[in-house]
Length: 252
View (tube, rainbow, N blue to C red):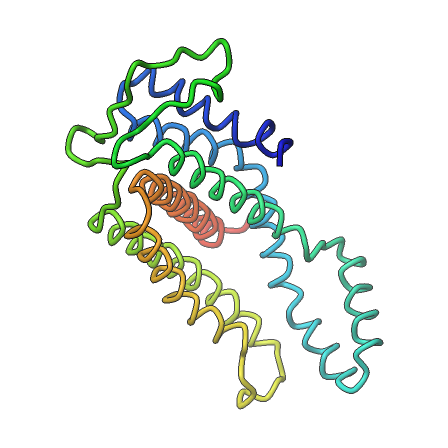
């Protein structure tokens, strides 16, 4: 735990306080730090997107293997791994960004929760680096209208709505790719698509969880989550627009 505190918690804590010293607004400090974190994770996010695209393109071949080796799980596993190796695809590549984002989210929860005590923000000087100035007090009001040390139902609802929209965007994008895959797939359409069912369930489960967390914990955490979600929406929109432009561009 001491290693996690030194390598993850303390740097995030000090960056947040340092940004507050610069901007004088705790909400703006959270937004700027969130954007910095998301920008730093862009290379990993790009790898995750590329991995998802490669996995989607391999789905017809994977389903052929599933039908061919339906009664032999061991042989199916070997052939599937051989397929991944042949096409140089790592099925676990998309997990790393998610793990890192979860670690950062948990750390942000701890940082904001430890700062927020009794509806006010309290500095712990022993957790600051020597070169980070300790502010006399921290004004927890974002733009002077919202106390980020307390839960906010409004911000929780907006964050949950943004989460729903972001997941919907992702599902629409994946659905288009799935339709292309199905054209080459001879599988009986009467068989349930469990991945599709799970995605539809997550479309509602995740926003509901977001709403619950946002209503129970300091709204500074919801602001971080909202900023992160809006960044991902912008990133997904850019990628989808770029792919659409590439599809419509005439072949030379």
